Length: 559
Image 1 (cartoon, one colour):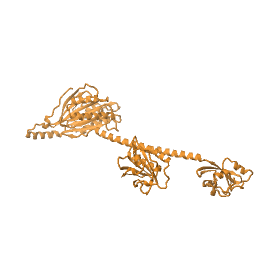
Image 2: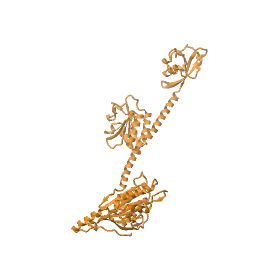
Image 3: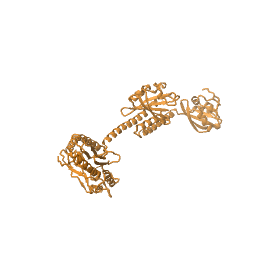
Image 4: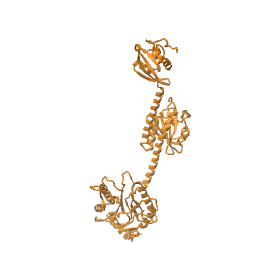
């Protein structure tokens, strides 16, 4: 091969032959950085090499810098390839640079590094996306991650049934804005299809100049390139992701599009899960709201108070329940129900809801306690569940300054009657639990409360709670009786609060069952108002009982 370096020979015999026989391209430079000699393979690898020229003028800059610095190794790009140069000493103070082609190695290394970076990004994206089940936060995270790692800005378009498009914008700096635009998604090529979950349109088919104004980021007059991909959800599309790049930046490559779809799959799954959770939470809130016990207060001359505490702090409903049914055309007495369903948690709450709904229905056709409980027992026996329940029913009416009660128990602890003088005794009502046996029997009793007296309905979560000094002793009926004796003459709210407080203190930090309490009181001021009403009624020829006098009294029944 004839080159400009021909005739320039190194000191020592056979040196040229050494260069030509080398399996690697080699360049020899002197102390001044001039090219002294080079092998034919070096000339082929670096066509610009010239005789007696400075290495900086005829070789890649990275090699010239390394030669001036006197380092032993350097590497860099040469055209589409990648070379590594290793320096050794040579005769006469010269240096020889031995070149190796590492293009395949470097290509593989860069591809591996790119895949490692992408994997790290996908892991980070998954962690951030799954850290919250809030739809707005998940949408914002999707937009920010996409803008920061895949484009210059991004838009997440939420699913829509019309032309009002809820969109979330994000920049690479993390600025997020939300708005709703009244535009046709068909204005953006591939957006309508993406919102329906169809495969994405290749970005090379989309003309950025056709993008509508609402798609262009604020502060820009045009888009360099854009890409639209669906966000696959749980069976339905969770929206669409639009990636935007500024003018002057390279177009999206097929490899980048594939990677963007991998990210979109993860983001779509997270958004789908967040929306599913949101829907389920909304349903749960609606159902829980229906299952929550009613608020009680003073009604029609009777004072009511109630308290409920589930067995777990993270539950709002459980197996214990109480309900209030106002007077109706069939029965002018109000009905209080307190019950305890076998089990805890949501399963027990489902049966609680069924019982409460059934009682609401039965209340419209039947007022007799025994008949109501018999029908309810039949309904529970016919259902698929195997749970049972205990209950106590109290029909309440005010008459002549007193409160008349009709009490019926179905396998439930008997209500406690608190007299004005501090005497406490259980009501003589008992019966079979419901939902377990076909043959059930119940006994009703009548109780009259004078002003200042009360009746307490409670679940066994109060008396069976274990605690005390050793943590193993039950609160028990005796302690409940002693507590109620101290509450004689107190209003209903105070009685309920006192009993619940002592039971919870007795349990301490130990687990406990659901607790439910309802207090029914004849207010002390009823005696005064009753006397005044009696005097007024006497002048009008009305009996002392007023319209309550026609109400049915208590009785004992066995069914």
